Each structure stands twice: as structure tokens, then as C-alpha cells.
Image (cartoon, rainbow, N blue to C red; front, side, top):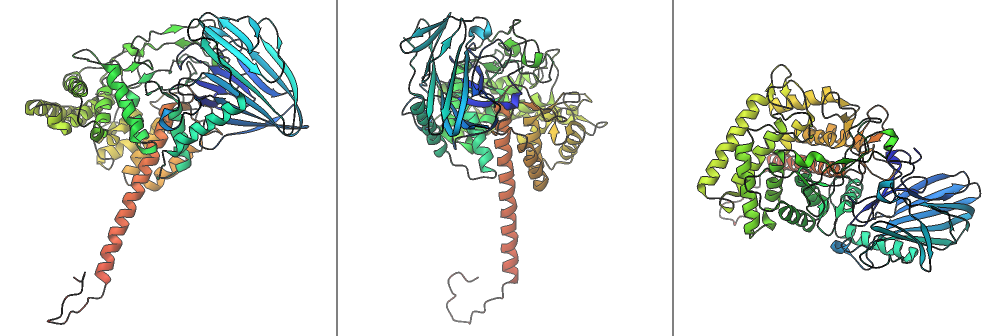
Length: 624
């Protein structure tokens, strides 16, 4: 496919949706209404599903980067006759700053072409395709630009050069000389609601959007290890946030494959409760409590009153629950990897680990939840009560198995975390009888995991009760406090998982997983840091961080042989893993420095000559 490799793409965001732009100047993915809406550019999944390219007409090389502190992308094309820069941005609302960015984004994609040197012939091709490539709209000239309407969506393209229109595409050819600039803005609006699309000035839009992103980044200083990597990942997570609700989607795309030509191609443009606690921890470290508080408020609203019903494990960005999956058989799929799906039937599954993730997040946020709203208290009580009973039931597990339910160890451990945090909340959640019941259930879960999760023959905790199969999810055990990383059996598990599931620093989820799963690899970093091996943890972290693309972006998985990024892109889970692993390394370094200071202080006191104080003389201040 002409759309290029997954990792060749840059990521643009406006707090409602995302666009992907490849290295050669083609916008290959944009769902302008919101993250999970139909695409108008879907070339990522099929050559005929729409794109918008701006590139030189002659051979070129490229270099690209984000403008500092932003998600505004600048690509410099160099040819024999000169060089030209294309700066791309999904517009933020003019004047929006800090935590207000993305709340009222105008749904505009701006592209600014600037001559850097010489004179460069440039070619523009605009081929919108609506409803995931199903519909090729008529293009109609309008005094304010070029209109394309199909069904419920309207686009208007405005540019500084004349466009030549065909039946379903527009083209332009123009020469850009040093010091010249040409702007293009593409605006979206619903066909029957909200008036005409508004196309602002491209240069002003790019500048205003950069200022908005920098205002957010400037509010969130990070003082730990690897600050540049963490700040970039924090921007990515912020870009994956649907700002009207505060929900963070798992990825910006659907159906990018876990293995080329494979069929494990799922829609990730939704919000998983599983990601919730880890996302909060990442925002806590790299952003600020305000971002984390918004996340918790969204979850409380989305879950509502749950009672005895199974907890939904995922939602749409505004809290929708029915995410029924269906195939788009007209699309060839990325690298001919079919099927292409929209929706995700994992919403139907029972996954008991989510109980722990939500209550653990509440415990993390406990100081900001006081005084606790009655609705929040009822929600947390109901989750703890479910954990006390449902931990005994099999479930689909955190990897969302679609064949059969099992007694996954990671699910039991997260039920233990739910009960443990509920006990920690104590009277703020329940009376003495409730707390005693949760404590008894917690201890019962722990005993079961220690007995049935451990396999003597394997020498490790395995993926499910009474199983011999390893699973990287057991690395969460020390990260949620179930066992210390230095515990003998936990230490053995870390070693066995690394030895059998790791390849060149990339950790697979299970034996037979086609590629390394990025966040699992970062969990291993955290486990090593906690088990007294900070130097090896640091080396692994730096090896993993070196696998980002040239813009600092991760997909979900990486092929350990070819280094190819695989799966939906960019993946919030991967960037959250990086932030939290950097935090683990920071904590380990601070603990080691503190131990060193205490040793030095003890040594200094022991080696210091004693001060003699004559009898009858006042003791000097501070003398011992």
C-alpha cells in the first residue's frame, strides 16, 4: 500500500479526533467528527479510501519533527532545486489555553507550505472518501472554497492556489520559492446541523494551535528521569483525550494488525477501564492532578449505578456502552490484513480485573475525592462487593480472549487490589462489617493466587490457575503491591518470564505472541527497578525508548526481528507504560540516593572526632 509503514506516520490531535500524516506528506487517516466516527481519509486501510497529499513533484528526501512542546508537525522536503516545509496541525480553538484546549476545537485541518530555499515544484492531491471509503462525493466550487458533501458529513477546502477539479478529486501544481508561503485549511461540519464549515487562515491557525499546545505543556513540568521522552508521551496521551468528556482512547486507529496479514485487527478508538489506573498514574507523574481528576469524573459518570450487574469494561468517548462490532468488507486492510472492524465486541466480555483498576485509581486520587460524593461512594462499594464474589469466576482476562473464559491470575490479583484498597478506605466506604468482609475476601484471594497461581514445574506464577503457560501480565503483581518484587517466588517469576518471553528486550504476552508488547516490556522495567536492579532496568528502558519512531511515537507492538511497529497507532497504553517506567526508575534512583545519604551520614557521625565539653560549661547549640 502507498500509505507506508505504520511507524512512518505522525500524529495530529485537536481534543476530539486525530489525523495521521506520513513521511511523504499524505494525510492517510482522519475521522473529523470524533475519534470513533467514520473516516474521510482512510488510505491507511485501503488505497481507495481517501487521502490528501502535498509533496514536491520531483524526487526528495524528508526530515521532520514536532514544533517544541506541541503536536504540530513540520516536514522539510529537500530536492535538487531547493527545499520546502509543510507544517500540519489539527486546529485548537483560537485563544484556548491550558486545560481549556480541545474543548471547542473547530474541526479544521491546516497545512502551511513555506519555501525554505531555491524553488520547488509542489503537487497537491485531494481525494476525500466518506464513510470509510464507501462514498466518493461530488466536488463543488464555492466562493469560500471547494465543497464536498456526502450523507451526514461536509468538507470545505480553502487554499491559496487554484484547484483543478475532477469528479471526485482535486489537484494543484505550483512552485514555492524561498520566503513564499501558501496555506490550506480543510474544515468539517455536519451536513444538517451547525451551518457551513468555516475555513480560517492557515498560518494563523498553525500559530494559534502551537501556542495552545505549549500553554498546556508549560503547565505540567516534569522533574524525573528522561524528561524529554516523558513530556512527549504526556503530549501524546493528552492528544488521545476526548476533551469534552476527559476520556482517553486506547489508540487513534482501527484494525492495524498485530501481525501482517493476520486477522487480529481490532478497533481501539474506545476507552478501556483497564487502562484507567495506569493512565491516572501517568497523568499524575507527567501532567497534574487536574487531568487525573477529570478522568475519574468521567469514569464515575460513564459507569453509573451498577448494582449486581457485570461492570462494562469499555465505553465510547461519551460513555456509550453498545460498541457492537461489524466488518468493513469493502476495505483491503492495512498490508492486506483483513478483516477491518469498526466497533469492538470485547464490550460484551466479563473482565474482573477492571474492578481493581477503578478502585486503585480512586485510592490514588483519595485526597481529591474528599468529601466523597455519595455517587462515588456507592460506585466504589459496589465494585468492592463484586470483587468479593466474582473473583471466583473465570473471565476473558486482560488480553480479551475470545475462545473461552479462564481463571486468569492477573484478574485475581486485580480483584485482590480492589479489596485491599477498599479496606484501606475503611469507614469512608463501608461500616465495620463491610470492611471485615472485604478483608476476609482479600485474604482468600491472596491465598488462592499463592497456591494455584504458582507452578513448581515452571518455577513461576503462570497466566492462569493450575496452568503451565506463562503470561507477562503476572508482572503486575509487584506493581500493584500484591507481592514485593524481591520476594523469592516473584523474583523467580520475573526471571523466567524474561528468559522465555523476551527477545532483544521486547517482551511477548505469551509464548506464540507474534510480536513484543510494548507496555509489558515497560512492566519488566518497573519490576527490575523494584527488585534492586536499577542499572539493568535503566538499560532495558533506554533500549525500549530507542524503538520509538523518529517523532517519539509507539504503536502497540514491535516485531522483535524486523523492528517493525505493529498494531493500532499511536497506542496510549505504550506511552503510559513509558511514563510509569520512567517514574519507577526515578523512584529507584531517589531511594538509592536516600540510602547513600543515610550511609554517608552514619559514616560521618562515626568518624567525626568527639567534641569535649568542659565541666560546668554550657553545651554549644547542636552539640551531642
